[in-house]
Image 1 (tube, rainbow, N blue to C red):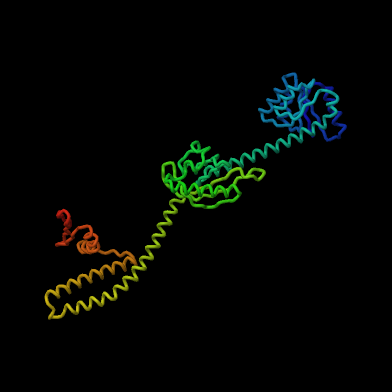
Image 2: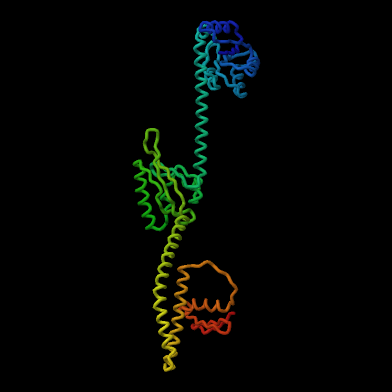
Length: 392
């Protein structure tokens, strides 16, 4: 074990050497008489312990120690005082000195014990610093993940007051951290509708009661309101937070905005309903088309008779026109129920317009609009106002 002694008193150095030799030959002592020489030796070589006098020819020992610390020279240091000044000892301890001794024969005899104690304390300090650094890095890492998370993460204490509010919560709800700390979620997050608010408050207190008893509540859908007044649906997970003794001291809240997902689910459900309706329409259309074909044939047979009076013949022709329209509607229903791949071809615009008007004819009549297709021009007349206008 290499020991550097910065001490001007040669007698005290000799006593230290003698004391160390009595404990064995595993100590190597080197001595310097000034702070400058001490600095050069520390910069040029490696020592296990430094014994530093409080008063050196070229300056105060405490000032030299501060200089060593500023330069990043870390070494277990034992301070030597002449009379054991308590105030000086405190200052030395504040600078990182592990122990101090008086310049006396008794202290020189106890020096091996002091050296070992200083080295052990130094290594414990280094381990403590390492663990603290790892703890700080781990904490910063976790805080960075939680703070930058896209979900709203908040923490409430046992009184229900918010003590943590991350950036995800600011984005989802619109409230800054400074606006919500110390408040309870029901004070500002619940919908303004009295009935809905009362329902959500009752549900909230019921869930929190389970959390205070140690339960974890996962993925519960609740309704909330943002700062801008927009109603949203969030999926919330509640977990108890415990102290070192296991006592529940708070609760964490992780909330995910699922408003768009719920809308997508509603659209999917509507699409499924429309698909089922299409199948129903197809079945009804088939049931209508078969008897309708028989009705049309019978009507055509009656219309072809020669002895049918003109009035009845006109009625039969009108009936056939109605049957054709019903057939067209049935075909449209089947096309809707069984959509075909798009096929593009060149067509005249007038027949397409006429067919389109036939589809809309019922709606137009219900709206009080009479539509007549004349010579390639569409003329619409409002029955309510009598205004007539036309478009190609």
